[in-house]
Image 1 (cartoon, helix red, strand yellow):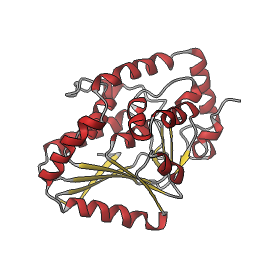
Image 2 (cartoon, rainbow, N blue to C red):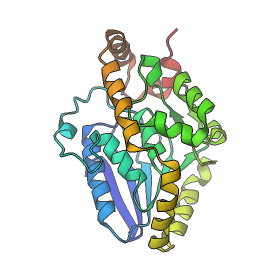
Image 3 (cartoon, rainbow, N blue to C red):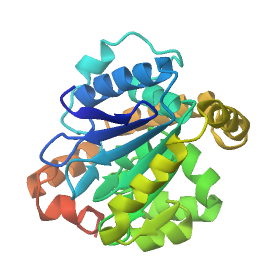
Image 4 (cartoon, rainbow, N blue to C red):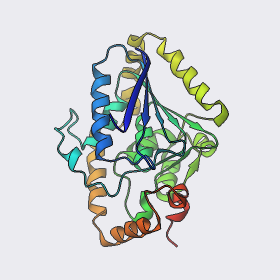
Length: 271
């Protein structure tokens, strides 16, 4: 796979690195590869922990590729959830009978934030992690699950603040809100994540699977919550004022390494 690269330090521990230069956008090719990854994990009886990380220290997953026409993923056969391919991948990741860990260095906004929300555990670099749902600044609501997942993690008020305010959250504030489990000093981050993953990987896979079966019904959204959000998103992005806002962002350097992507929470806010 070109953008979703898997290494297996042991049969029970997988490490998955996102690598889609220049800023790790989420697009059709990445969705195709996520589908393959999920299918492999669902079929493997030995894997107990999957750590998701980035090959780019500045961008975990920047956001959805707004120039992607969606054709490759639309050609995919329907997954078992019957949902849009990206949403299908996120639902299936959240329900894998393994512990999934997002090791967040750099920016995880929009679809990148929705990805980490679908994983079981989120660790953030205190100095380098940036999370946010910036969609409302363009006039649309998030479409891939953030309105369903965030309130269950951080509560109603903070979820609305994150979604409606559309600001960037650094590691410390994200930890205080419950957006991530823990913010770890960057100098200690890699060792911390590895130690946690290796510890859980030594445990009995069957026990982890049973644990997820108990926790999932109490914490995961029902599948029917997702399609209305995605329909609203697709309808909204066709509005002229939204398209004009997106064109302006591309003129400012959206989706290229540089100040616009680095400070998107500031640049994108309408005056």
